[in-house]
Amino acid sequence: MKKVALHNLGCKVNSYETEAMSQLLANAGYEIVPFSEKADVYIVNTCSVTNMADRKSRQMLHKAKKMNEGAIVVATGCYVQTASEKIAEDLSIDIIVGNNKKKEIVEILQEYFKEHKKNYIIDINKTDEYEDLEIATVTEHTRAHLKIQDGCNNFCSYCIIPYARGRIRSRKMDSIKDELERLANNGFKEVVFTGINLSCYDDNGKKLIDVIELAENTEGIERIRLGSLDPEVVTEEFAHRLSKVTKICPHFHLSMQSGCDTTLKAMNRHYTSEEYYNKCMLLREKFINPAFTTDVIVGFPQESDEDYATTREFVKKVGFSELHVFKYSRRDGTVAAKMIGQVDETIKSKRSEDLISVGESLKENYRKEKIGEKVSVLFEEEKEINGIKYQVGHTKEYIEVAVETKENLAGKIEEVFLKDFIDNEIMLATRKVLY
Image (tube, rainbow, N blue to C red; front, side, top):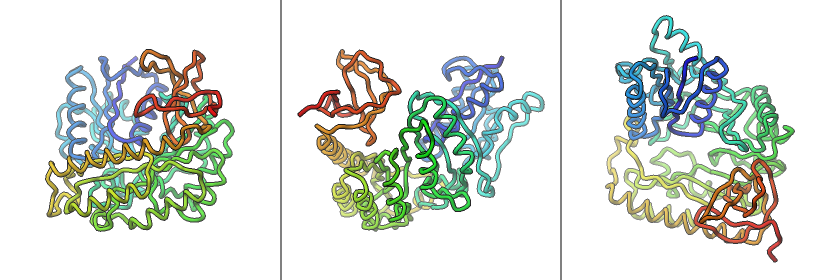
């Protein structure tokens, strides 16, 4: 029995695909071992979102070969697609597997052992076929990510992903239904729909809201959570139908990147700050105090102090429950990398630190508003905090909550009352009414 070790770099979509490959290999008789152990085959699912991600991908591939020089090293994922010529010449890599070929990982290994064929890269920009990977179990015991879409047509000026993932492609509704039922039968209470551009899901006219309603009607699934959404998907019809879904988690990660219209235009984003704000307000009309999270890039080329200040004020106006702040990272092969007016790293760092501070204040304010409320928590694990053992899980708004009890609550959903903060990340709850 050959031993296989897998390592994932990058996004939730990559994580899903790594898990799916692991299950395919296990079903074929391979023994799955931790990446730190000696293995016969090492598979690295690479990322290419930044130049740093490329570098980390190369480092991990070379590390695998050093751990066992006789092992087969397999490179797959986005770095493989964006640097195919360079990676084909790397002698430490035995097999290169392009995106949309991961589902064939068992056959690819069999073919390599017979014929030593190395290259399995396709022209990702010339396929409209969705790679139908699937999973039945995941490493988390209560929450499962379910990939339903791949590819992106947006071509934001800072992003390489359309070149690594190709055009938008969607999973068939029947396939999604089957996986929802498998996950429910294996005890998963919450499903998180994910994709490269989730908002663009389209299976012969069936849209994202139809997938959500499918999950609503799946017995055993008790919570539905959405990955990152583009604001354009939030229409009157979408918001109305979504508000009727009893299992939906009112935690919306709406992709923003900047609150300044000048910067949004330079990024080739297809909305204005006012349009973005109106989408948030539309959802707030349908849901009671929903959680809004987003990503913000600071220091984009030509972003002035005034532009940054506009974004800063817009973030406060929206009232996000959490911010993910990134300094603009120059990515070779993108339009933004060639733009004049690249911002100094010192200025980027200053803006990043400032906006992170704003985000922490917003996060604290949102959670303070919740103190005293009765909330539904899906418990996941036991944690010891300051010497005390707690059962820990997340609310529908994705607030991490801890309850002091000796009872094992993992996998259970309970209503509790938010009491106070344990630290910056976790809130304390009680099973008793506070007031």
